[in-house]
Length: 570
Image 1 (cartoon, one colour):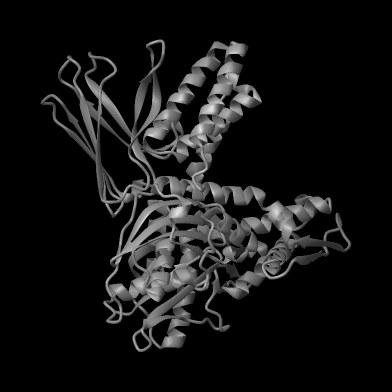
Image 2 (spheres, helix red, strand yellow; image 1 turned 120 degrees about the vertical axis):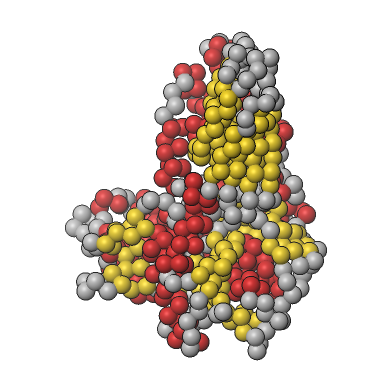
C-alpha cells in the first residue's frame, strides 16, 4: 500500500512519504515550491474553489468567500459560510487534504491510498472522529491518528537516536496549543500527560497586535469594512513575524471606509509585543503547569524540551520556555515540519519500512470520566450534583477503575447513575454521556460498585454491580457520544456566568472561588479532594452572611490555596 503522513494544521498542512532509498522522511512540495500549504479555502465568482496560498490571499480581498482557522471547529456542528456555500470543518479539511494529494501525485507520480494524520493531543474523541472523516471524504483510508507532540518527539528521536529520556513537547501552532510530557525508552514512546488549549495559537498573538493598533488609532471594528479588517489582520501578522528576527516592526494601514480614512502608522517593538502577549503567555504557563502536575514530573526532570509549531519561532515563546525549564529548547528540526516528519515516520512504521526499528506509541484518556453524587453537608443534608471522578484525565489507556457508592437512604429501591465527562466540580458544567438505572433489593445499606472501562478506540463501558443479588446493569458509550464540542463548552461557560449566589457577588469572594474552581480543574487525586473540601467549607461560611466571619475565613482560604498552588516549575 502507498501510505503517507499528513500534518493537518490550523495554519498550514503538509504531506510526505518515507524514502526507502534515502532512509528518511521526504516532504512533498506544492505547486509553489513550498512544503507548507495554507489551510485556507476560498470560492471565486465562478464557483471554483481555491485551496492554499491563493485562498490565503483572498482572505483579505474576499473575506466573505474564504475560510481559515476552521480546525478550531473540528468535531462541532459549526459551519463556515463561503458565499452561498456552507461547510463543516471536516469538509473544509477534506478539501485541504485533497489538494495535498494532488500535489503528492504530481511530484511522486502515484496517488496514495492510506494515511497517518496528526491531531492535537488534547483533541476530544469527537474531534478525532471528525479528522478521520476528513481523510475519508478526501478518499483516504486513515490507518492511524497520531498525537502531534508524539509525532514531533518521534521525529526528533529517530533523528538523534535518543533513548531513556523524558521530553516536554511544547506545540504552539496557528490555532492550538498542546503540552505533552513523554518518556522515550527502548523503542517505546509513552505519553505521561497532555494538556492543551484548543483556542490558543499564533492567530491569537496576531489579534493582540490588531487590538493594540485599533486602540492606539482610536478605531472601532465597526468603523471598518470586512476587507479593511482582514487587511489590518494581515499587517498585524506580518509585524509579529518580522519581530522574530528584528527588534522593531512598522505597521502601516490605510482604511478604505469613509468613517475612518487617512494613513495610520505605528512602530511595534519586540518588548512591546511581549507586553501585549502577557495574557496569552500566562495561558501557556498554565497549560505547562497542568501537564507537569499530571505527569508527576518537574521542569528540572526534563532531559529535553522540544518546540513545535510555527508560533514557537517568536522570541517571546522561546524565552518563556527557556526560563521555565532552565534550558535551551531544541529547534534544530524545523518547527513547521517536525509534526509532519513524525507522521511520515509513523506511516513508514505501519508499512514496515526496513530502515526503521519498531516503535510503540501509547496514549492517554484526554478528559476525566465519572458520575454524579450527593455530598453530605455540615447540617446533615445532602447536596446533589457533585462530580465524582472515576477515570481521571491522562490515565494510560486501556484503563479500568471501580468506585463503591452507597445510597443516600436505606429505603432506596433504585439508583440513577449519570455518567459525565469533564473537569468541573459540579456536573452541571460537564458533559452528560449517558445514564444507568440500577434497581436495589436490600434495605440494609446495600452498596453499589461502579466500574468504568475505557479502551484505545474511545469506547467507554460502565457496569453497576450491587452488593446484593440484584442484576447488574451495563452501559456502553461509543465514541460517537464522547464529544465535547466548542458549542457545548460555550454553553457550559454561559451557565457558570449566570449563577447567582448572594454572598459571592462581592469581588473578593467571587475571585477567590473562581481561583479555587480553576485549581480544582487543574488538580488530580487527593489534591483535588482537598480543594473541593475547601470550597464547600467556604461556601458554608458565605451562606451565614456574617461579614466578619467571611473576612476571617477568606484570608485562611486564600492561604490554603497559596500553599496548594506552589509553582511546580521551580
